[in-house]
Image (cartoon, rainbow, N blue to C red; front, side, top):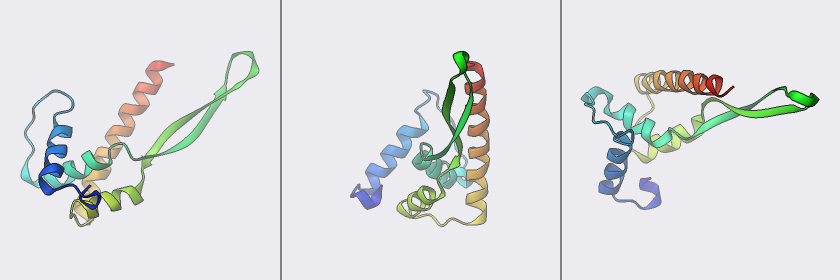
Length: 112
């Protein structure tokens, strides 16, 4: 975001808006702020794989299924935020990614 010419204040405003996108206030512990800021920047940067199944009348239906975060996008966003992708930050991000994948799978299953 900074690379696109946004000021530090604009970046912080954006991140704050993403934290409250669900309409609920919540406290973020200082040790989790970097991971949450990175998640807010990359939450829509998924790698999708095709998944198919037999459909009525003999056709095939193909659906794009998220497989994980695009790690190139993660690295770019981390650099834009001035973050270093160390083991702890990647671990925190992986935890959020795992939970998001579970929720997305549950949502797909509920639609079927």
